[in-house]
Image (cartoon, rainbow, N blue to C red; front, side, top):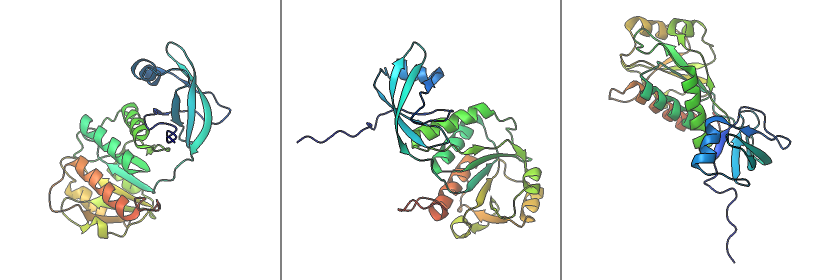
Amino acid sequence: MPATPAWPPASTPRLFVDEPLGLERAPIIDGSAAHYLLHVMRAKTGDPLLLFDNRSGEWLGSIAATQKRTLTVRIECQTRPIERVPDLWLCFAPVKKARLDWIIEKATELGIARLQPVITERTIVERVRRERIEAQIIEACEQCGRTALPELADPVKLPQLLMDWPEERALLFADEAGGIPLAGANAPAPAAILTGPEGGFTDQEREALLALRAVRRIALGPRILRAETAAIAATGIWMATHGDWDAEGRSG
């Protein structure tokens, strides 16, 4: 007897929809997503779609109707509730466009809860295009299966970040001058990682950071890492130590 095919198929497109989803809803897909489905994927009435809304989780639907530039979806059932990710922030100095895209994509895939751009004295890129970052976040969530988008905070200068820092949240300061290995820092959630710009932190910034009670100075190995490598390496180490990478899916 032949096996029953998996449903929905692994190739089912997965999209973020910025509206509440539910059994009584009939969301309309338009814009670039509709163009991709209709003219690249050649989607047709009856084809399955997976949708998530950053509110209620993930839902299975099917295409109920197609127009030239839009398609209407019939919601059939919920496949997963909204996820709970570990309470880890990534505070990072913005870098040049392609490398910034990489930070956003990989940090989202790894399960970061909040992305916080930080302007330091040596930050070269001070203007951050929020719409571009939001698009990167959505695309990464669609690809990796997240049901909740990481929060994107507005850029803040380092002195203001430190002035407003919540005392209960450990701030893991990735210092190129050295520190304790991150794996041994014993900093479970709530926590945050701070990585610097391409030129590193100044002496004055380092002094201000080390004066903050919540700061723990960490090292990321014996080699000099690019800013984007440091951000993702630190996130991966923390997730493996305190995050949700264990077999039971436990969050930090």
